[in-house]
Amino acid sequence: MLFRQLFDRETCTYTYLLADITSKEAVLIDPVKENLDRDRGLLAELNLRLLYTLETHIHADHITSGGLFRLEQSSQTVVSAAAQTHCADRNIVDGDEIVFGAHRLQARATPGHTSTCMSYYCESGKMIFTGDTLFIRGCGRTDFQQGNSEQLYRSVHDKIFSLSDDTLIYPGHDYKGRTVSTVGEEKKWNPRLGGGKTITEFVKIMDGLNLSFPKRIKQAVPANMQCGVVPDGLPTRTLSPSSEDTWAPIVRQNGIAVVPRSFLSEARAQGYEIIDVRRSDEFKQKHVENAKNMPLNSLEKESHILDKNKPIVCICLSGVRSMKAAALLERLGFRAASVEGGMTESGTASCG
Image (cartoon, rainbow, N blue to C red):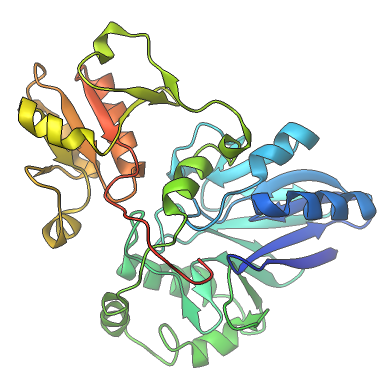
């Protein structure tokens, strides 16, 4: 099997190229838009035919080139079904397999960093691509995109640490120049998840991180929900002609009603419902004025208490959950829109 580990310096992201030497069929894991020319050139030089681009999750620090490769080379985009994207060619679940030539990658659902995380295990190469679930001597954060520390701990122990100790671990990022580890090393030396750490100890570690947000989260998450094609000129914001949208300055993104953050003050003045669809623990930490907490996972069941004569403005941290909520409420007959970009403010971060 042909294998290449590629690096994006700005976001410290690893992209992985795997190919069958005989058939020349190839896959790319976590390709980055800014490196499209590099990756395209490498495929051409090695005379490879790209079958799939695989995402380990909906990234917040960079934009994928998966959708662009599909337009150019007819490759298929692969994303976890948990992301509920409409752009992907394959929405995979735990246990699904990606076949290229004589090789295959097994999808292992590893949520916790985000709800959409998927690791890919290659038995023939005895390697696993862990995305942001497990780093070399670290792991991904768990404080946004439906992250959950307890879930991440279980994902790592059940789906990664359960592999043989000599299985190679290839992470989604590294910030110290390291390229590969093994299951045995991380079980022993990972300061967050190894050394016999309990789930209680891990949760305490993660609760104390206090990290700034990725500086590109507002652009990256919505773009990656569309397989990354948006920034390259394809239309994403079109004024809706519907007379039902006259209650707010609505634009439609993939058919979902979106309003600017500045509209919140007018919504309060008009007496519209402002619904925060994050988990209750997130809501208690911080929320916008006059917001009511109705978590996304229980919104449909609780929607009967809402007034269909009153417009609803949905908000979350980055805009992903609130877009899902607005789409759900519109299907239920409400006038609803999502706040673009959510509550996230631009910040600074090093390597994502």
